[in-house]
Length: 306
Image 1 (cartoon, helix red, strand yellow):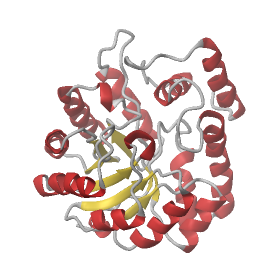
Image 2 (cartoon, rainbow, N blue to C red):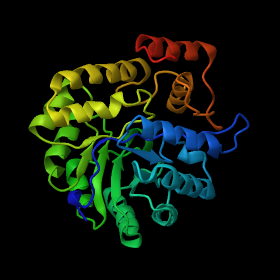
Image 3 (cartoon, helix red, strand yellow):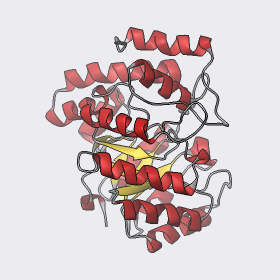
Image 4 (cartoon, rainbow, N blue to C red):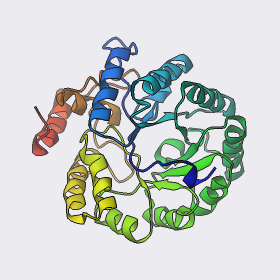
């Protein structure tokens, strides 16, 4: 497999997992959220990622989310399964569940907390690639894993049989560009910012889009990339500026939340829009009233409240 084995492009967000107020998985809300995302013409979704609180999901719950997403929107959107895990055996079981559900691919970080060596990172991905025949997107997430995959290491990983894409969330912009140049002809490359820099990168060097989080702006997110593909750079700038408001108000340069937690921010913002995003699950906490006010202010500024 390589970049031409898939048609992934544009905005594919890691989406929130709805829980009830008492912490149960809310599949009715999940279906409603997925329908809203499809109606907003997202290019795809990532299920059970960091925004989806994979760390508090049981193996059975993650598989159920995969199956439900495939049934609900698999014919309308690209659906990727988040397979983050501490061991290759766990990641393989999640990847097998994604394949059994009929998902279009999987997203996988190096093992979090472990801080693996370069050789251990390669061995981890090789084990998953050799065990499950499903398109794989390598996710470089230094904030969550403690390791930053540089261009040489990503190039080595791109040679694995099932690797077709990279989501690069490094805060090292120079490293991001070096990896883009090294990988653009081999795998799909995501992480392009929705600003003038991103426009310049995609129109002069390459890149395939952004695997963001939450999709709070709805259609504005994918339409940025549709505008770029159509050559309408003025419209892309307008849409990108709206996304920049959210990124600057709510998140820091390493993609961490400026207040509360990213999952609660996204869920509260979506709920304000009438989307059934549900509650966060422990150990995460809901936003405080003051934090909710910050989210509401941004949503008001962007004219997103009903």
